[in-house]
Length: 225
Image 1 (cartoon, rainbow, N blue to C red):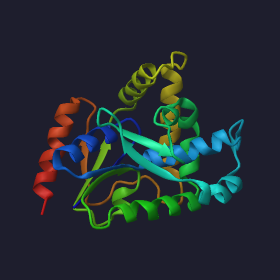
Image 2 (spheres, one colour):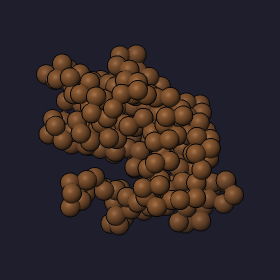
Image 3 (cartoon, rainbow, N blue to C red):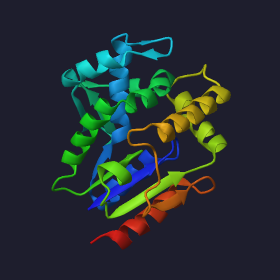
Image 4 (cartoon, rainbow, N blue to C red):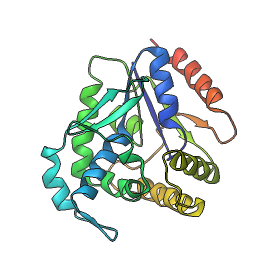
């Protein structure tokens, strides 16, 4: 069984996806982290300068990029780039500013989508991202599209950044970045952020994470073969 969770940034997709996977004993795949790892490579290689991204250099380097996940000591999902745990490194504002650009590159999307589809062969999983229910797994048994008010999303992201030690970024900067990413994700020609026709909408602007999980879990039970 495949559960596809799509939606805007900072709507809690990863949180509910992780809880669902644990409750259902499914595999969890964080596709957003995969694009963030590729974005981190571009930054580290110096291919991001003053808002310019050297797409050709990044595409040529794709065969040298190995993406994986592992469980932490507390059972948390950790992103692994070429053997290095980079979970904290991919959650910065620097990566936030470039990840939508990176994910809009057709060659990057093709490589990562193919890898994501291979992950779903012969096993049940929960996968969250932007195009899971429309491109990666259009025949998923359950598709959830998550959304929330932009001010609430910005406040959530700011709290997350503060918890990770970033004390300089402002709420206005975070909201501007979120809205910019929304526009880029929805406007790209290759696999834009869209709500699948058969997706169930989950607006979590005014409900708690526990309530969000409960709704998603009930939907999963209904859809489970």
